[in-house]
Length: 201
Image (cartoon, rainbow, N blue to C red):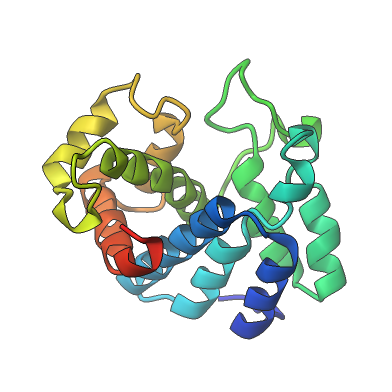
């Protein structure tokens, strides 16, 4: 795997500097956990994949009110921090227009770009599926991650009106990364169950 030029500690410091909202921070931590699990599955570098998941929304608090800047500001932040071109390109790829239609609200320069590598597909699918998993937990009476079963998550995936912002087309990019949907959902669910205490679920 190519170098990121950022250590894990530097990445955590960067996250804490730019992300203050606890919900956004948890989303980044969830994305890190799933990316680490995917790296383990693929026999790749777990820490580097984790860093990519952790930092993928590094500019969200600066751009949430103007989403056309999302992952544009991130380039500036990451370059200033010394991140490699590989890390920057992988992170901004999750904001490409692929998987969207006329509802695309991101940066105009990203609208027609498409992801092309395993790690890009993995990141897009991973950070998107976090929303589906958390939503599936929150509608449970007990709100416990450990009690969410894979069959229930698969059912929720098929309900297009459930957590509709979690675009199924993007989650299905797991298949382009080399993982069947059921296996991807299983890996993602187990990854978040592994950090349930940290998530308060």
